[in-house]
Image 1 (cartoon, rainbow, N blue to C red):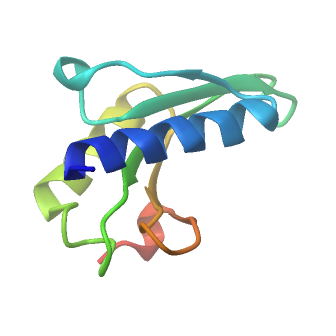
Image 2: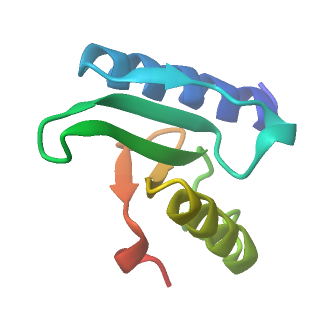
Length: 106
């Protein structure tokens, strides 16, 4: 399985994980922005809709290896523009999934 196929598989797995937790998930496509997935659900905390822009990485090694600083800035800017949250989901081939929020990013 090539790198793109591995990444797409992890995106589908994360999508199923989020949908099971009550999120509506949309895959916007490569040309529509910096996020692999857009998560949405009703939020009592905000008295509206919670939105999360997710970037999913499936590489082994560092989560930052294929998530460059300019990509991180672009994801955060896009999230801020629509009052959403940004997250990096790192799910290596033989490892556990971990979600990183911007305050944890180098």
